[in-house]
Length: 322
Image (tube, one colour):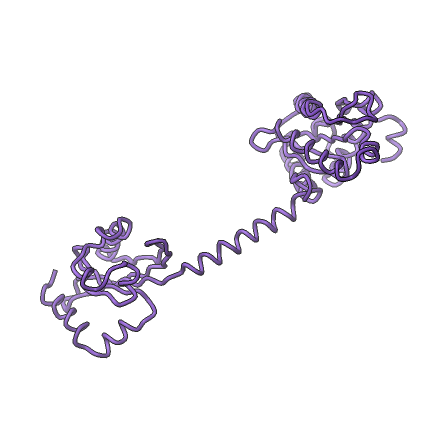
């Protein structure tokens, strides 16, 4: 290090009225650091940043004040010595966030003698960004989830179903669709009231998700007392087993239902595997899947409810509705 250069720098900062004035009054925490990682000049805002007055900072190693800052100084000199630049980066110091900009300072011979570091306080900006991010996450959640059950809504279901159909048509990646319906739910509402009906929907929805592993199957509130689920890489038999576990979980809740033959709330379900249907085209295939799952659900109802049925074939009456 050029000692004469560093002495001249200190003198310039102390004696040059214009330079000192600018350095002190800038609304930025500024400091100059030598190759040994020691502070050789600081402005007033930097003393606030560091929590020490200037006399307690000059000559002190940055690493002794802030571990990350000390490591960054070593990296910065290495980058400048290699002819590279130091990208702006963020750092947290004493609970506040700063954007850091680093510039090289050369001696009269052109050798890197020190670096100038500017800390821009972005604490409030970061807080605002976090707040906006939270709001955006909440809005995103509300746009894709049912407010009552917290499951995905019909919009989210349609989007995921379309995606899985496209994947299936492109590479025959099989998946299964499940539809569930709470048995005799209108009678439940008539007997216990809509407020209790809402609580019932919430408990049923929560119990359904307990069979999911890593979000698969994905459950949705399809509408009213109907729920849907999509499971990846599964045939119809695998889906039936999962759907039957859902049925059993709901039954375990033992929610009283005075107008059910079993005396408790139950669900019925219909299951269809994508591989069970020929894929003519995307639009028709999506429609075919939904009709097939709905038909299987209808068959479960006809079988006495509290029942899960696989899609087999359409009845003539059902086929005429297509």
